Length: 212
Image (cartoon, rainbow, N blue to C red; front, top):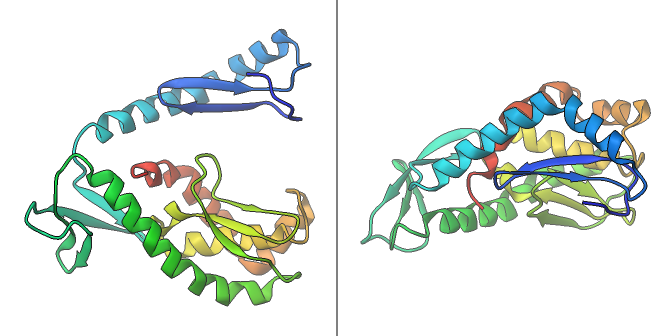
């Protein structure tokens, strides 16, 4: 796929590989990139295939702020998921459980994210704009030049420290709209353990896409 962009990107999703590149990049360069990334593509394709197979069955648990919570399906219970000591209880039909869990997680993110935001935003070098939720499939957060920051609602499933890192990452972009050394220094000022959190996302992030 050719697009008006400056870099070459590879996406593995829905059991297929998508290569996105600027229109003027020669085919020989694209082939070289594919060859160099063959192992990475294969690993991600296998993971996507496993996730697709898992989604074909009713889920038995969900990650919630770093904890694995059992999903308890009771047809006689309320349609709206209810978090209890024994797990997340869902009523109604089984075929749309994933969609209803995703809706529940989105609502919980809308409730919880501002609490983390209010603690970290005052530390930013520049006053941020509006906080918004994102449903992006390829990024955990984004920072617009006008100061608006979006956070992926799926982060509600990760440990709270991971959310703090992503917030710090986007707040650092208020000062540096790149990933330069200066950017990472600003990220470290806001969140010193950023390397640990980034490694967690790279290792465990795929599981956060089981719902929605």
